[in-house]
Image 1 (cartoon, helix red, strand yellow):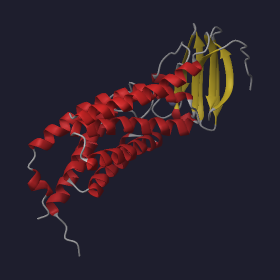
Image 2 (cartoon, helix red, strand yellow; image 1 turned 135 degrees about the horizontal axis):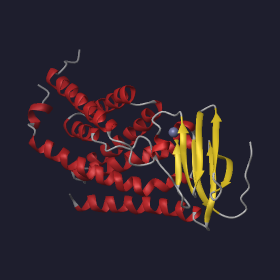
Image 3 (tube, protein in one colour; image 1 turned 135 degrees about the vertical axis):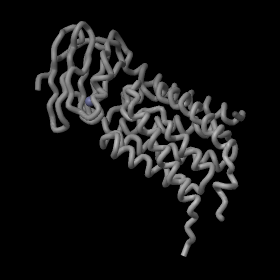
Image 4 (cartoon, chains in turn yellow, cyan; image 1 turned 120 degrees about the horizontal axis):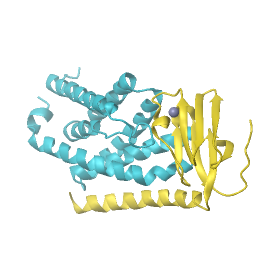
Length: 120
Length: 171
Ligand SMILES: [Zn+2]
């Protein structure tokens, strides 16, 4: 390995750390207790992390069942290719995120008060 | 008419087969990160080796055929789109760094591994239209750095032990 290699690797790692940190600091404002479900980048529902419930998401992309249980969120069912979203397991901390790429679905936890449960 | 170099053609075929084998082995390894399509990148050993030994166009062809075939055989449309974007950006980066002649083989491989994952993340960001997913940038770059390093040293070992004249010669 040459000196140039180390400089290159160092610069790339610092840049990527800056990107991750900026996103992390944005989503980590206050006590994390709100579960946000988004499809195609648009929030379709926000729920309290403290209330156990199951939220089915059915749209043109397919079916997902999001489960909130014991202060944790996970994907219980999905008919997507690969089932990577189910394999991602449970999340419980602010900024944590589950993604189901084939279904354009994101589930993440953000801080804040004023939880309003959106029915649709 | 352009003369076809049979020896070269055979080696290229063998390299594609080797890359396909790597892809298959990788498809058996479970996902360890929340972005679909993120893998060890073992097939990148073959692409980098091809970049070192063949013309850029030929190396590109080896890599591209590998991505298409393994995507159709072992993947789904999403993993194909992801690995395609990863391959295109990492190939471009490795080609530029190799041409600059300022970096070692592991260095080129590490840059390729990192940008492979960056491209996949950007692809996921476009599909999801969500900025929040960019939080994975650092972990993915660290993973790309580690896998790129391992692959780079394997590639270097293979490259130093092959009879280059025999493979590259136009005869
Ligand atoms: Zn899924």
